[in-house]
Image (cartoon, rainbow, N blue to C red; front, side, top):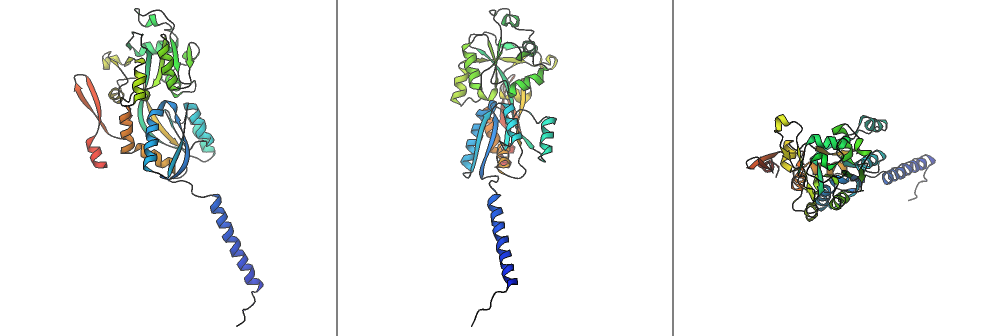
Length: 335
């Protein structure tokens, strides 16, 4: 039996169908779904202040989700926001929300970033081991930052005379931004302040200079099980700070311990926030969800910071001293 000739009409239809199939396949290759909540590869930027806790978060996330890979840039906070706006990083971990001007930049490109609280952190004040000053008032910190108290002897008459050197991890640091907003001044940037490139360098500089006053994210010194944290603590002193409202707190002094961060007794507390520019449910969403989950919040708790999404309770160990624990009810309901 002879095969009929293919007419021009059918031939054209066949070519059209083939072309449509080819274009469709080509589109799939050009715009594949490259990542989801538990797989794929993305870059994120984390404020260097929070490196200790987010190294643990990323390591644990990778161990659970083998097909997921986060490339992490540990940078000053200002750089993290620049990375988010330029789409260098899909999400960032910082200590503040977007400003109105930053939000408007995203609105121009029809992107509406989401944010999730991860933890409550504190800014620790550290001094040289030979500095005998144990406590400082909130008002004295303000005086030092405003330039009204430039010498250690003005803080305590028993101290040797010496010009106070303010040490930061970076001039683009989230800590500097926090202090500027907290105390309403940037005077401390104009004289006798130094940026030394990293939190580790802050500890190193303070440990070698008797007149130094370092400002450090507390996660670098709060995990008692971390050998690096213990090494840092052996090199420097961590100061107690009074609460500004002495009528309520009675003029007591507090170190940046976990319980005092939770109660607000320690006055230099800030929020650790994750911000994503992801327009869909991708890997950034998956990682943010993990950090906010019971397992991620356990890592926060162990690090010495205060979990933001997990109920906690304070347990009185002895008079006027407290420790912090997970809420057992929460744990049992989420296992």
